Image (cartoon, rainbow, N blue to C red; front, top):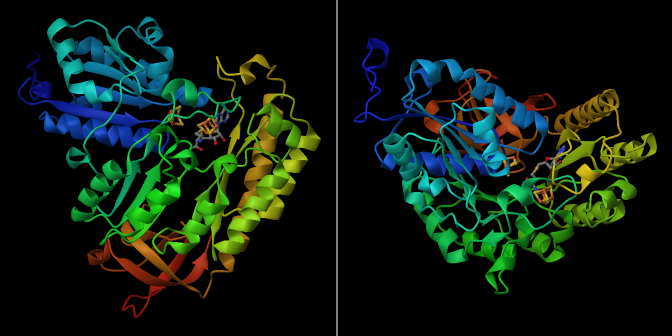
Length: 455
Ligand code: SAH
Ligand code: SF4
Ligand code: F3S
């Protein structure tokens, strides 16, 4: 143990952990669950690696850039680890699952590699390293994660993410997720309800249900249970105000579910349903299981049945073989469907996937320029759509201080717009009505109804 002036807190009686997450929402929630476990074991969470006995990175493999970022963060810890060899450095999550032992080879100062289904064992794995001091790896694929939520660390009391299923069986040709997260496993409605009830009694008003492919919730349960059933049951829970769910896959999105959404008052009018491309040829190569007209009709049906519905989408540009014509079809889809917002990614080959066998033949400059074009198009559309909200009143769940202006508050509408306004901190966690008077492509600005504050 080190007892220098700077590091006097680094001893076994005072355990500190620094944690950073690189991946999607599901990864962020896994991080919260892990931190909850460690807190139960007496660990204190710190916001700086210099104060930490244990440094953990929860990692992502979805694109090369996500991995490069983690390796560069890990590389930067080499010096710290040399100075203080008792610090434990761990790599968790998707990249740990995918790269396994190779992480130790590339980064020998890493002590722990812990995959996507093993983080409930974190406390004992850390202890193993403390006692035996060697490289420890845990990437067992059969282990089922089920951590009771009561002990979870949560950054926001009013809003919570809840995992309802893990894994993905879709195998879109470009995607690594099914390989690193494994097969689809749904939790039972009873399990989920128990967790949501505990969250509500702890002050939670909004839950976002998480699944990589959430429309196939229930399939692994050997019952007829569907996502619609789960939504209906949660809708009945007193104290809960809003329910969201991500991410929807067009192929598994049933019209029944859309009808159920429109019937349940707590389910928010928002869908995140990635299109990925507007070209039927590319969609086929991507193994998405639909053509662009199917997607268009699905969105029209949803908008017809759910008034004020907003839709977010994801697109990949520069998939192998994507021509200018293919790309134009994506542009057209975006122009006609007018999404609320879109996430746009440059194709990144992932070893082991089907698409990785195709030649990555779209030059990076072309990927970049297509990416930029879609971003600009979406920015214009978002601004035009937001302008229509000027003068309108929206309901906002207040999250906390605005990131860009700590003197103001920020929150989200049911349609998932970010709203910034002035108000007392007492309003945090409340549902308030805001009149919109100014917008950008990303944010709405407004005033509280009957507000004593200037606009
Ligand atoms: N079904 C999950 C997908 C997670 S990955 C979900 O939507 O939450 C999120 C997005 O990353 C995908 O929708 C896709 O647009 C993008 N993506 C996945 N694999 C990719 C790759 N190899 N290259 C570029 N983008 C990718
Ligand atoms: Fe990946 Fe497709 Fe599964 Fe989403 S649905 S996680 S894009 S394989
Ligand atoms: Fe990344 Fe794993 Fe999520 S690969 S996108 S962190 S499921």
